[in-house]
Amino acid sequence: MKDLIINALKEAGVETDGLDDAQLLDKYNQLNAGEDEGSQVMQANELQDLFGNALKPLSDKLDAIELRVNASNEAELESLVEQVASSDNFPGLEDKEEIKKLGVNTLKRMCANLKSCSGLPFFANNQQQDQLSGPADMPE
Image 1 (tube, rainbow, N blue to C red):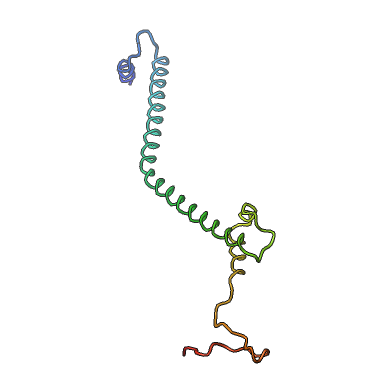
Image 2 (image 1 turned 90 degrees about the vertical axis):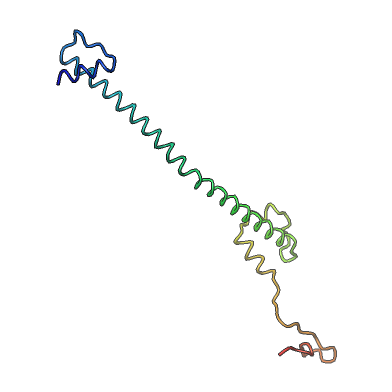
């Protein structure tokens, strides 16, 4: 066993002449500890590079999706802000920056209140003020 330790130390370039068994064993352990740490650092770097390269396309796609979602959300917010700001239903809300602070959900509810009911228009009959009548030609 001593011969294996001495040969390993000589291959690594460590001088072994004049060292007793305890010193040889200590040098051998230092040599192996240095190799283990170096190989662990090298393995960690290789793994980091490997995973970084493997996950790069996924990360790029995720970034692109986030950009599209954020742009879509921003466009929706701008549209809602414009509708509320141009409405006469909410006096005092002309400042677009203040309207943006309300949030998308609140602005959606406010815009829902701006929509008028859709259906058949009724016209007041000039001859009879108390009765309402629909259009004369109604589709079946």
